[in-house]
Image (cartoon, rainbow, N blue to C red; front, side, top):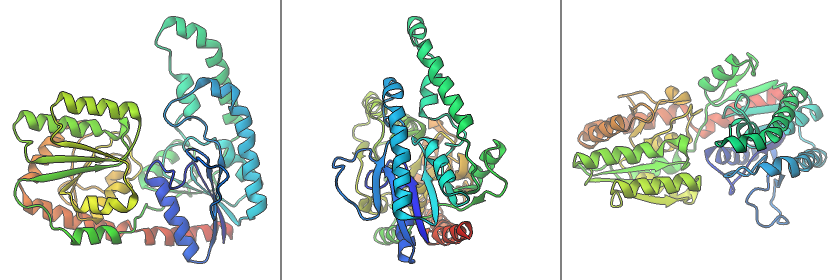
Length: 412
């Protein structure tokens, strides 16, 4: 098959696991003899004239990733939409795909997917790993929020009214057929079907990872002995990821005098404002000796960082579709303490392969940390069960097998 992937971002310019999963899927399908090309955004690309084999970075994102610029809606958006359609048309003419695989649509205009359906009818497939089909897009999210001051509301009202009117009209004019859809979890499928945006035939293909590097990291180091506990968080440093809950939990343990043997590594990048807020929180709770901000690290270092850890914290507060980072931690034999939000309910089972706490509940998280800290047998049992969970249900090979068969059905 000749497969054209459409994704908002693509490594090395990725925001998280979804884009990494796209790259891994492309590489695995190429090894199986399929010809793949990726059409993605130019965001963060310094040299626009550099060439990459199989990747075209020409799409415009709908808005700046960190800070919305309202004037861009009126001054840049119209011609950027036209440029995106031209980029898609050129990719279709040049690559001549058998199927278009729409992968990551957050912060991309849905008009790209609409044009794909019009220009290659019946052969557009979607991997849905978020709620972009029902959530307000970045423009709607901005223009629907009220201004804080009355005078600002009065000044912005004409622009707000016009923007929302344009966006509502576009939703009517550019509806998506969504004939071929897979979701990354049963939770996502049920939610979108209940909202009436997905057909009943939508399938579930669970995310998967290559467990090899993580299993190897686990074999290189045994679980900790005694009361010392090295905690790790890997993921986006963003408000909905709930990283503040982990810091608050350590603050509670410090008040109890139980934090001296605890260390927390925060691995990942995110919104600068939220990260600044977390650093102030660490300072206010006097946790400088406990918490380390690693920032973004190369992918190849994640396995070893997990292998050197004794517990993985998954603190998300939103309806997580299903988290890749949890799979990696489990594959590395690291006991998981996490929130069973969204699709995580299909992976995390309290007391069996993880310890589960309620979102935003720092006290409950602190209790889970203490429980794990003083029970080495529990750590070992959760680590073994978590690793089995990934090896049996969440491998990359299984995921690509199912996607390949599904894409072949779509083409046929």
